[in-house]
Length: 139
Image (cartoon, rainbow, N blue to C red):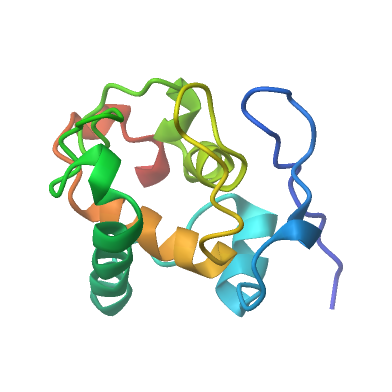
């Protein structure tokens, strides 16, 4: 068995490495461990997880981003215009979810486990209505 290095995940605003030790307990699943090594969400395309992600999104995200991720107080999340272009990658989207961003988007590590964040991301990727050529997570 060979050891694989984890990627470095960074705060979108400060550039500092994200500290996963502050994350809500219960999210250090096999899927999250795999994600930390690859930067690709292993839940993408998994219908059961996409549904769980939808349910979590409706509770945690829809108030600001809209029920269809069309945007309200916060930007739309289902098209190919990203406030942070790195959100076109799973790693970039996770960095915003975990560590927060400018404006009203606060860090979610107190509200959601890292695994729940991956589930929400799988839902967002499932409802994507933008240009597939701009969807870097598909590559």
